[in-house]
Image (cartoon, rainbow, N blue to C red):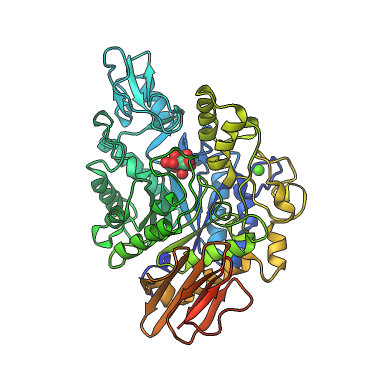
Length: 540
Ligand code: TEU
Ligand code: CA
């Protein structure tokens, strides 16, 4: 058995705005989540990563926090939050809060007083710099709006930094009082009985913007160790940092238990396998299964002895996995199950993003007015300004528009997919009539039951939890095949990533089926013809 609960558990991410509306205003909320806990218990997940529910003007749907210790009234009250923690615990589900401490909203009282008074105690909680030759201090740009990351404050004639939207102001982690204020806030939540934090863009907190160092600042790991010491301390507490910049060696630094920093990070290396390297967000290339497995394997091997992996295909910022790496036509269910089997066979903590377990798909739109995502909207304006016509710009937007993952959860065939009786804040994917929870639960061969089984296996099978990973190298490029081995048990995981059949040579051994996405599976191993998107786990 692996030591920590989070090494034996599967985490489920909830994007609260889109999960379940309880009071029919078209916006998902905390009571809505509570009403769906039995469903989550049936799926078998043991923790919920809850995207932000804090007070926020929603410039970036909650990733712009105005009060870390208050709940956004759209989502409910602090009493609802306490109820959620308790009701979840009754079902052996723990709550992991989203911690967004790289920046706050410009409406946070810290920033309000920092801006109002250059001598206020909070001034230095943020990053201020004097103009250079009457211009911004340097040419840093904001990832979201493309323009300068520096905003001028006319009253003080200084600039402040915002690496995301202008309403997401970067905090200055070099200030020890700021760090203490953050730790105090974290302890408030820990005292409430939460079981972990997911840490937004944690690789950016130690930035040194005047030196143009944005990620992996020199003191990053000092801050994380200090945070660990002054807040959760207990290695049973789950911490997962979002680190777009991290390669496998960085992942090891964050998660090596001897360093007492984080449990694990989200590393994104495998998600470049269908993107032009160094290209724009919409510059796709045909999926290279070779690059995909190399990135996954690299993390498996580098983190084998110390450290820990997170396993995920998608989240609230990314396209839906089945649309991206599988197929949304006839083979949607087959390919969604293949993706699940491939990922859940690996060593690490699996994360399931709401709707993934029923194979929800991207939701392309034709008009920019239908887009909510702040990032997609601003990039659209830039593309148009650079000369793209509306159609071309929308084609690009549809590739990365974060709304793809944020359409309301599809519960049943009722109006608005059972999410609400009111028109939702973001339109429901029109395919809800076919793809929804009620239909999936009623169909024993649905994607849902594959996830349910994989999640159950993770709980009980030591080989899945801590078995050694070994890649099978001599397989065709389109095949991902590896073994996991623990004491006397060896499992072989094998997946065909394409819709074309392929022959693969596997070890000549007798095999006992654990799970497959076809009704039957090769009776014996050896030379095997894998059918389209075929995937299985066998004990050998
Ligand atoms: O995302 C971090 C991040 O780098 C994003 O800009 C990401 O690259 C982009 O959305 C992909 O298209 C985190 C949160 O997950 C995201 O929702 C927030 O908007 C962002 O931080 C700012 O808090
Ligand atoms: Ca609501």
